[in-house]
Image (cartoon, rainbow, N blue to C red; front, side):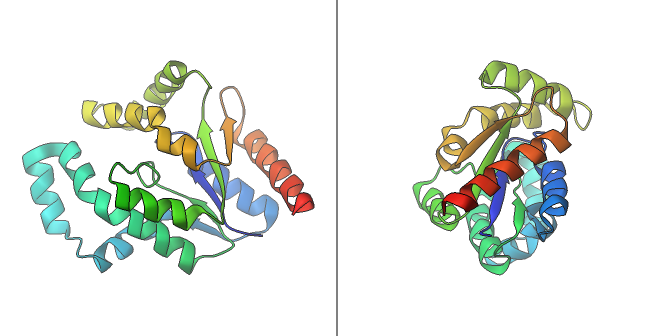
Length: 188
């Protein structure tokens, strides 16, 4: 099995579905949120600088600070954890800068990429995700950036499959993805 990668906005179910899918397929899992900062530090990431930016510019500044490190983390995670079920942070698949976007596209080329969204209707997806995210934060900057993640075209460009999750359990979504992977394996 090649690497399987879950992408999508915050609260789209990436981590939950990845954990279930790893159990279903008896495959190892790699959670980007657990390892990303070790990769960021390879390129000079500084927690002190991040905190300074957070105090001065808030979450939008921190988000911009992370961008150069994210593409590197995608590349390194897929190199270090081949044949794993990966769940990315919401921003890892959304790259505005051409060089970073190219690194992510190249790294994901051999992976099977699933975009998780509540609905094909972007406004409905944004509303559902916002309601779920409000259980974690009321920070308007985080809510707005998640809307941006839901809208961003790079997620759709990277995705081999888009899975709409509204009114489906994580178990049902995992079974749907498992069937797609089995079908892909039969045609390989």
